[in-house]
Length: 554
Image (cartoon, rainbow, N blue to C red):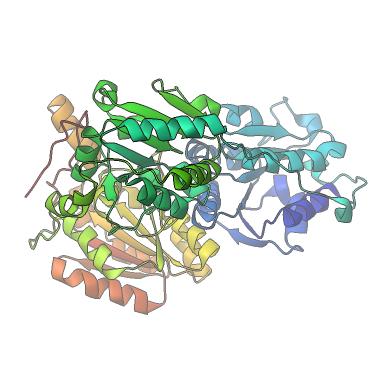
């Protein structure tokens, strides 16, 4: 059997039903069999967008997708997408075309060692030079992508290898199994003892809980133990907004006043599937304080990476939550948290103001309207910048996998291809929320949405600035340089751009008009761009430590 056909059959057996890619001369041997397979392929307009779409496909559905591209600049355009998936623990199989093996290392046309380039930013990379090892390499790639802390795997496939013949029968192929580590019984006992001894313990739900499909069990654990729940940014939606134990987010950027207060009042943190990264923790001395930490993570290297844990448990989040539930049920143990019953009242008291009725529109009002207009039938995506931070702070998300940000990478241009991939994976409408500058990154992917009749809605929070950079320059350095973009509210016409890509477009100036504009976007049946003209001078609440985040009210 041809190597390319064999790999495609392996992909099908491994459960792949969707590929996001761009064909090219360096990978056309492989594409011959993609076209004859059961795998649905979507052709993008930029290779980076292929990986963002494939990553969002998994984030929204839990199903791995494949990203495909040709050699040379096609492959190097994959790099940002691979990095984005890797830092957020998202498994993707990325297959790049390559020059024939005889040309490797000889500066042949569009010949670049993408496997070597991606080594630091992928979970693992391969360059297949022996056709006889192609099937076992792809099989191992699926195991590596799924096992432990998930991540993207790059497979570089030279053209002569793609076209080689090997002895392979799909009927004989069996996917590799992989271990899902369970916690030790003594660690479960010790964790419950620490919780029982604490006065104000809390549960910190991280993105690993979402990846383990364990959010419902995690909420049950919080209920059983009477623990307020703070979600990290990557776990947004892991607990219903109105749940009595939902204490929001904490952090120096995508944090909320309630989350920061509940965290600072705590004396023990049960952190499950989290990483304690910098935008969450801020100043480490403030974050750690005198409180104890139980850190549960499937990756041993995450335990103690930022600061030592009082108890580290290397295990799957879902299995650990189940073990804690089982043991806690035997004892009937509940924490003695003094303020748990007051969380709903505290949530109302500390909620940020969003009901601004002014022109130019205050950006907070945009997120209030999004909360009111869209329910759980959509998947939101967002990339980076001040709009992404406002989104994390102010958007209400009730379901896991209903909110898909570029977390660790903070990648401009992520939003639209991610919304496309999430829509393909779930059948839900993708809604990309982004700033005016970020909108110009991968704007060409609107064409992909239009051609495939996927009615993604892009909401542009147009404040005519590099808003986050302006704020950093202003408060961090006392100057402003080359961050103002008044042309984005005048000279540049995003409505015409949308229409040029066969999408619906509308510009909004009055906050009262936002719901009707969103409704027209939905009813258009097309992908849509709603350009909301906002006040350029509104700052975003943030700070350097959990106890000194500055709030801005206008």
